[in-house]
Image (cartoon, rainbow, N blue to C red; front, top):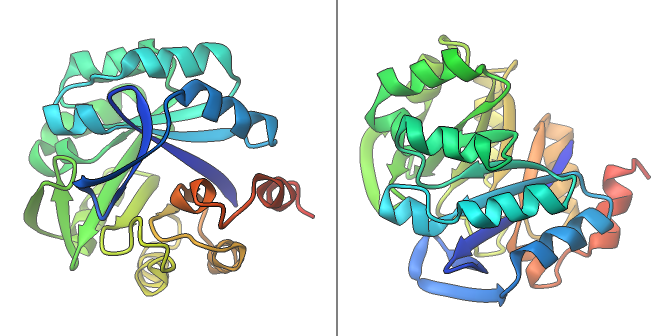
Length: 241
């Protein structure tokens, strides 16, 4: 199972929100590149980079940070936040992202998402499914849709989506454990899906459990920044020790 540390950007700084609330923001570092380099030095190979300014503004804002990280590390970066147009998605790829995570457009503009899926391929387009009480949330979690998660996934799996990052907003940033039951049900219904667990990972035990369940990857954010999970522990985990 891949370990994907997360860097969320507001105003060029590395932050974490609690349950997606921009008013519950904590700044952890003013230098996202330095944070990314620490992850790389610890033997991690992936990074989930989220442009929270972009998610709120409905256009990419922090592409200079993306370019800086992709040009000065060897990390495999997936980028999300503010990707709402052909220009946005091309800017993300031009700035060095290997993959992009698309959430809001997949909910609000299905034809455009399917165009991107066909143009760039399922290897480069990750479906972002942010869930609150079983329904999809969009626009940096500022809006709740009336679209049910499993119907949403079924429709896109049928169109060729292979990889999904699923975040249970109720778990995010609380360090209370991941949404295990939700992920079990997703994997039961869609056994061939590459499921990336996101939100609530607090301990190494959480990661071992997600791996045993069959998750392809897990995103770890606040647990690293708060010292609940050490980079050396993650190095051993990804090294198979």
